[in-house]
Image (cartoon, rainbow, N blue to C red; front, side, top):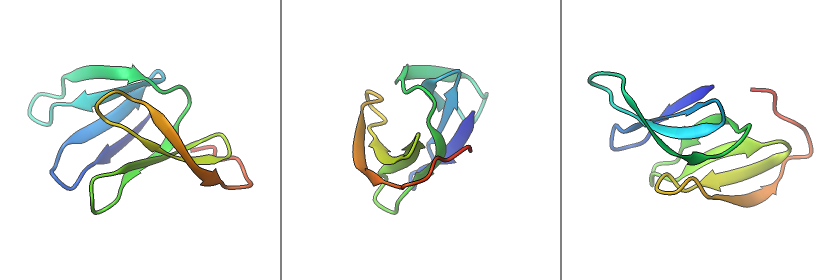
Length: 79
């Protein structure tokens, strides 16, 4: 489980391997897609989501949950 808020104030979370958008008014969630065991969610100033997938730094498309490897970290992130 992890959570991040983009520069527009939109909240996203990983719940049971699913990337979800989170309604900040009532805490309801909408599943975007499966992302597996990602952790350490964050956004840059341009609204690009970053996370860690095993030993890889990845970007995550918040529209379809697709991942793109940015590079290898050399160590595994545990959250």
